[in-house]
Amino acid sequence: MTPSRKNAGEYHWGGRTVRRGAGSRLKRAAANRAMLQLECDPAPVWLAALAAATHRATRDGQNRDVGWKCAFGRALYTNDGADAELIQPLGVSLEGGQTLAVSWAPGATSYTMQVYGES
Image 1 (cartoon, helix red, strand yellow):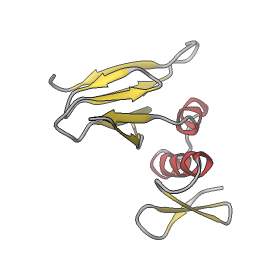
Image 2 (cartoon, one colour; image 1 turned 90 degrees about the vertical axis):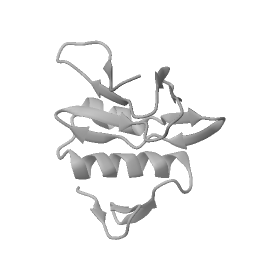
Image 3 (cartoon, helix red, strand yellow; image 1 turned 90 degrees about the horizontal axis):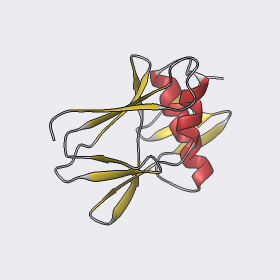
């Protein structure tokens, strides 16, 4: 099943409408899966598991959802602000402009995480 996108921030998955950032954790997880599948179709199992988990970026005491992008077999998130962010539950700190790349190598038992950009 492939999600469709009609309006910005709104995804349609299995006959249901999911709005990014609104509603329950399940809706956010479904929206993340839909967004990843739109950009990385078909999404590998490890990427679907990453998208299903709730990841939060904390900056200046404010939390927001991490919006993963898919490119070159990796999940990517860039801190587009000027201040540092903490990505939980991964425990990774990103300075402004840095990108976190998450991947899973065949035979590995955990994610591989790399931070790119100037600190």
